[in-house]
Amino acid sequence: MTDSTALDPEDRKIVTLARAARARNGVPEGAAVRDDNGRTYVAGTVALPSLRLSALRTAVAMAVASGAKSLEAAAVVSEGESLGDGDLAAVRDLGGAGTPVLVAGVDGEVRERLTAG
Image (tube, rainbow, N blue to C red; front, side, top):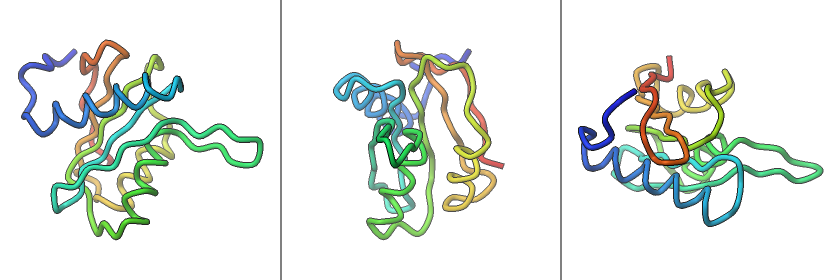
């Protein structure tokens, strides 16, 4: 477990945004990513009959659709214990293997700090 108060303020911000997206939309996961210009993109799980995307993949897609060229960091808030390989691959595709990915519980406490690689 990582002490969330010890996080960089910008990392704490994306965890907070991810947590708010999850709560606001009543979805299993919330995610936020920060691009290389400091812009943030926030999303929740997409669960339509014809389209299913995790919150993290949705946030990465929103960043790409908005013109982001790279990512600095990503955060996911979820009850789940781990991320799927596809989630990390999406972050890696845009941000590179060293992009930090923060995984937090629904209380906002960071449980794990991964890299996309």
